[in-house]
Image (cartoon, rainbow, N blue to C red):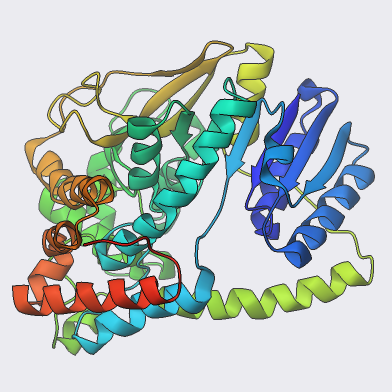
Length: 439
């Protein structure tokens, strides 16, 4: 078996997913084929994963490739973790230009103008991936971890023959974090819950303890408690959304604040402070990660071996379930073409329960979402679908349509400002070589 990792220069994430595979004895002997276009980062990841394999007496053969087709050749599983354009110049551009027009973002990688631009940069690269996959490993399963999750996974499933699924860790961390931040003394491992919707905006629709008792009333009561934990203080946006709309959302408050029109206003500093909204958070994280990585890279150079414990990522468990034909249940993003969530558009990419086995992925049909939840999802789905349309038509005005329909952008900027901002972003990314021509 061969597992190909695209974007292996993301060393910490590659370590987590590949380390999980190394710690999974059911996989037996297998190959890890690491690929990246950055030779230095590829070499660093190769050293880390090779050392892990050696330390934990793994049965993997670790290989590295600058040539993508060589890495993909004969692959059974492909893990995608690329970021086209990186922190510089693209993330800097995605935040700096909108800020000139008065539009503030927190993360900017999933929706909003930042997510739209990142998707448009990544679509051509995914098309190249798909061409290679269809030629050298057409039966491989593609596990997409790159954001913007819904748009990228939706693009692959709508425009290629690649057998893809989108994966995120926000679903499996949702209930454990919520119980911890609200001081509810229940082991999350014993709970049963229903979660579905779209990536980064799936809804915790029910949650019960081991005896079948509904925990939601206690959750909502504790959310209004007078002595909140630090975790709850940092989660005010999601807790307010739950208070208003009745259900908790899977993704963090810093993400959620920029997916809806109610929290980040142009001049409302007191409101930002009330909900502890960390504006320009993602660029800060990038700078911190770069500093941390420089320290880690020095340790690698000195030959220090990093430790690893089994993570909560789905990747290794999905691979094991398919390879050993032991069905595994997880949540992932797939097309809604079969009406998996009946009251969301069929063209949408939705996040639902999925069972995998040797035959592949089997998404499960869900009940209709509460109407208010479906409406909020649709406000995010519309710009996602318009972004996919723009990639097909090659029209710059279609990108403007997508940005204009983003809930946060539309709540802050005028149509005139939106068009100017979108064209300025397009011009800069085009100049830097990260966008094809749009007319």
